[in-house]
Length: 328
Image (cartoon, rainbow, N blue to C red):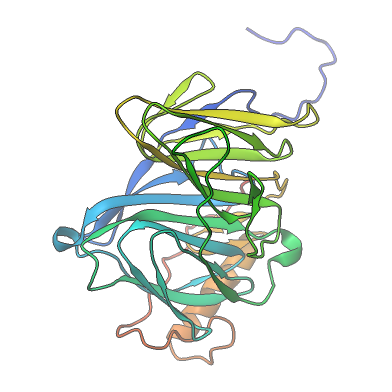
C-alpha cells in the first residue's frame, strides 16, 4: 500500500504513548562467570528516558557467597547523577572527591558527576544478601558541566492517608506532601512505595511529569495492566488535563514494593555510551580519551583518583567504529 497524496505533508514521527506501557528488562552480567546479574529496564529501544531517568538496574536478592557480590573498580562518569538505593545488604562507596560512605537499605546515596568524577562500589564483608537498584538521571545541557558533588539522605517513613499499612520513602522531589532536600537539576520525583497484600494506594502525581513504576516484589495492578518484579510500567504525562492520579493495587497474598520514578520530559538529545553522557560523539570520545590518559599516568585534571580502593581503575571499552548517535 502506498500514500496516494500528490503533495503529502512532512511528518515528524515520535514514539508518543497514550496509555500505560510495560517495559521488560534484559539480563546483564557484571563481570565474569562468578558475577552478579542485573536486570536493566532503562535504556532500551522502546524508551530511553522517563523524565531525566536514563538508566535503571535492578539486582538481587543475590547470595554474595555464590556470586562474590559487587566489586566495581574505580570508573568515570560525566553528565549525570547516580542514585543508589538498597533493599538489603551494604555497599561501600568511594570517590575522587575523597568521599567514603556506605549505602544501606532506606538510605540514598546521590553522586553528581557533572563535568567528571570517578568512584568505586563494593559490597561489604557484612553483606550476605545484596538487593537493590542503581539509577542514573541525565543532567540537562545547562548543568552538564557542573562541579561534581555527593549527597547522602535518609528519607522519613510516611504513612499516606487512606491506605492502611502503606508506606512511602521520598528520596527525590515531592510526593504526598513530603519533599526531599536533595538537589536535582531538573524537576524529578523518586520514592520507595510499599502496599500490603490486597491493599490499594492512590497518589496524586504531577501532571507535567511522566512516571515509571519499577516493581521490586509482589505484583502490581495499575490502569488495567499487571506488572511483575523487575518490569517497569511507564505512565505518560497528563499534560494540561489537570491533576494526575494513579491507583496502585497489590495482589492478595503478596506485599507490593516498588520504586516510583518521574520527571518532566527533558526534550533533549544526548549521546549515552558506557559511563559518559554528552551532547555528541566528539564530547563522549574526548571524555574517554581523558580517562584513558589519566589511568595511564597523565595528571588527574578531570576525573581524579579514588583513594582507598585496593585495585586498579577500570579501563574504558573501545569506541565503536561508527559515530555514536544521540538518544532523545
